[in-house]
Image 1 (spheres, rainbow, N blue to C red):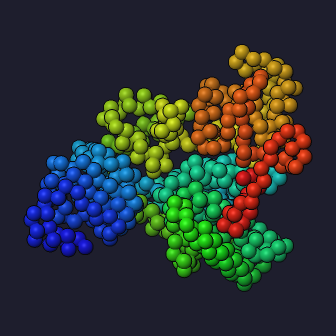
Image 2 (image 1 turned 120 degrees about the vertical axis):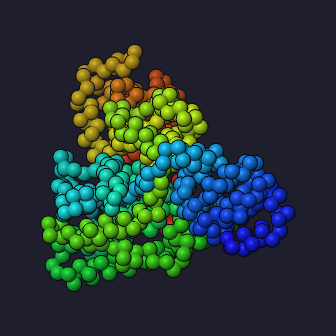
Image 3 (image 1 turned 135 degrees about the horizontal axis):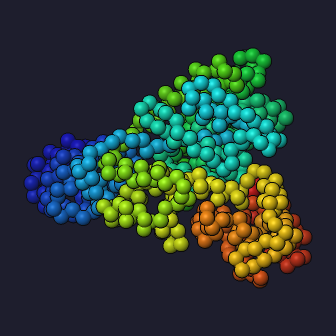
Length: 526
């Protein structure tokens, strides 16, 4: 195609007067050089060229160029796709800053480790980091173990780069954290406790066990980020089996069940998409016969110190997967990353402060890019949050975990015990007993009094005025519902007790619906 366009333009010189050209949905890997000779060009449509990896800086020398459409050119690394999606102005800034300061190759990819509780997610990350088998203490009933709350972030050395790895909590209440943090430039790693699979498949069936331990987590991740690539599968607790043959039988059962479930989901998706052209499709399921878990993407570990080979196998695979996401960014842009890293004592940075410190980014191209690659959270289009740049994602999870926690009742009990007998919030003072009743009502119904929120969020660490719009943006907080004496909010993911049919006697309106969630029942908190 490149050669054809070059010959075509050279033969018909009058075509150089073109003002608009559409070469979308083609198979370019780089921009044909002939395009840089179209001196009258105003608009260039490159959209949906999924193989396109680079543009030509000479394109910017075209005197009348006004618009370049790169939507769907997800393989772009020069400039990065997240820059090109911002338009011609951002592309110009990238090349200008690159010429002015030089560039540095950095990874714009992360990894997300998901799976059930006790699967061994944190142990896996610690092992990757230390390059030796490192186990983390776990107790399903314990209150002092290292069970992950919402998520943690670790830096793992992969080749010559540092890869940010998200360690997501395995409890169902933390599924909502995926859409807070995950972008398409992320490598999914699903961790499965094979001892749990063996127990569940014995008491029920293999398909149900695979659904509980793999598919539930996988679907939450891929529905929040439909363009994610194929996952890696890590099977843990091999040493809990009597011998290798017994383990291999169990492994075969799991993989067979996963193939069956994914085949069913593909059929369901096909039916759902009929007549629904705007429905988002999961890219992973696009190829009907593609193997989701090929042998090269499956790794096995046991909880013993001599089980080390799999660690290097996973690191090698991560390096291979991260390769396409290594991009050159201008060194001037790296200064903003360094600035973020230095602000360790702040829960967020004000946008006005960033603009003052980096006046060269008047159009906020760099800041927008940092958000797109998942380095920061910046709610550009939310008026109440636009001036807050959340450069420390763990601070956001701390704010979320005050309301969403796998040991919720214990957390609330600890919170109320720490309060004085008279609680002062702003201009209001209430007895502790009344506050405890508010908390009890929330745990029962999911309806949260505004005063509780004001008590939870400390003005010095994470102000209520910032926490509320943040939680609402994530759809974790609905409201406010204006009631007396204070407004209330509804937390739909959190109601632990079902309000049954007798609720209608108390003048509640109840709506009952059936949800088709790829053939499976939705999680209990949905």
